[in-house]
Length: 425
Image 1 (cartoon, rainbow, N blue to C red):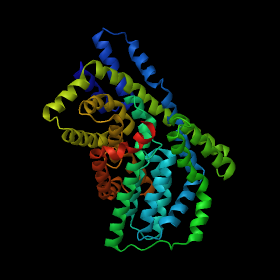
Image 2: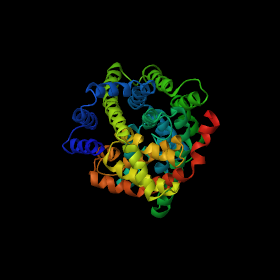
Image 3: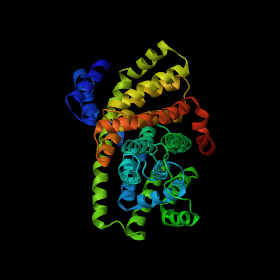
Image 4: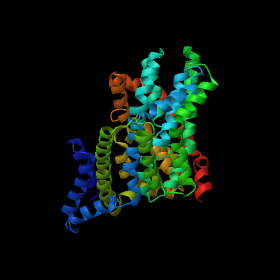
């Protein structure tokens, strides 16, 4: 039964069926072939899978990020980051990273970062004489910070699938996200030393003060979200609504850079993206339920533990597996399919579900920079107007700081769980 389920899913993917259809279709085929369950169980499980309050955060976080991009707020963030760190050697590389850290506290997706800030950053770096490969590479790497620092769409999905506190996941992402930024800035500094990069701005306190005032309200978005969730003022789902309302007020009434036509466009894009994500979640709900009932999850745990029962070795195997999966599968689909399979294994070796959530999301973010399905690669190739192959080569060196961060996050659980323990336990 389990082999039939997995094989039918793979066949549907190979013939070009969308992931959601492949998940639900293979599940329906298994239920029909067995005859012991009514076919309506597929529909029932799919509806139950999306009947979850935390999933309401998805459309609002997507819309908040789109509103930030459409309302010209990304330009204010970029100007602030330039005044803050542009005076360092390789300044625009550092600006790229700091801008992504700030924007990460607003959008929750790597794609929004790459498509929004990335457009501004790559153009500015080209104008200042940076080669295209370096510009594209650091832009791609820094965009992966988006889903690690809260808010984070992948963590919302993981929290729902793993029945895990989304607030704890958000808190756990803060330090690893800052660590990602630090390792990337170290690599930018190394590039600046080797290639003799210049300083792109002089430090001026007056300019820093001016750009801080211009960007003050957008800069308060992460404070609003992180502060509100950690202090218990609102839940992560309510934080998504607050972020959307805040971005809407800034774009339409404070800065007046967002028109009604732009709002309608953002709303339609949000609806389309949300529908795609929820279809995947619905299909994965019945697929994951069948994986559990056919003992696939237990079998996977037994196979891995028969190879080794040492936690560090099991984590290494799981990391390698997730890195490979990230090359071929979209993030949301990978989380919804693999959480029911891998989480029981993690529990058997004593890994905290919140810790594993960070490990899984970070692995899949690295997958956004690896072919053939790396979404960020396709976006950057379009933004920079270069080939997909050249984009892939440009991003490859910047996998080093990401892998270093992954190793630290994997084998130093205390760092990941410090903030969740402080605020929630």
